[in-house]
Image (cartoon, rainbow, N blue to C red; front, side, top):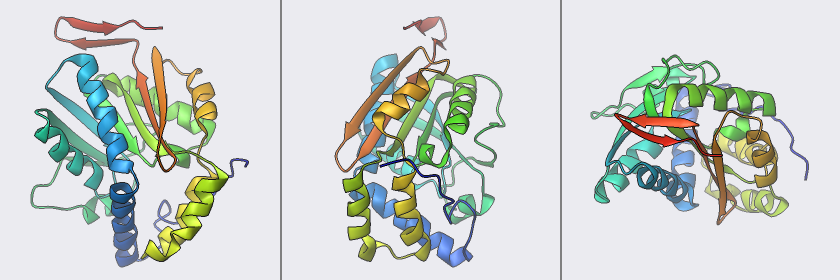
Length: 239
């Protein structure tokens, strides 16, 4: 099954505000029901264990309404950790859909040219975003993420596989938005395999890359920096 790049409707804001809100609600359910939240939590716990820190800051890229990092804050808090989150999304309308009384810091910006200085956050993370990028763009995003983080980049994404595509079509009755019904199979078709992701990340400036697969075709990728500092403490250099 070849990777096929496809424009996704939610990326292009090709819908009314109500349709976008419904599509984002579909994403929340997909992450909650089909392993997305669990994958992101495992990635975060690995970062906490790696550093020995009890509190870390995270820039969540392509955050949409911010539901994934909000849920992660709660999950991590129950484990005795603190996560300070900043949201970034290309579309300000997606961030507005996520407005809450307890709103998180949010910035509209380009993932390929992050509007932050070097070492602004401990971690950069993204969920269901990497597959939207071409190989060249993915390497550009990784370079930007490693520039603005102190520890590493955490990627939660899909694995391309014919059975995964079949499962997406079987789940069509669960999707409430026409945007999701178009975008869900498109996402699988343009996702990367573990082998493709690994080969790409070998071209990055990462010191060490960990890739794991989980149930229902989820991919967990940790891209660690060559040198990470916490006060006088150094984590690196790994090869």
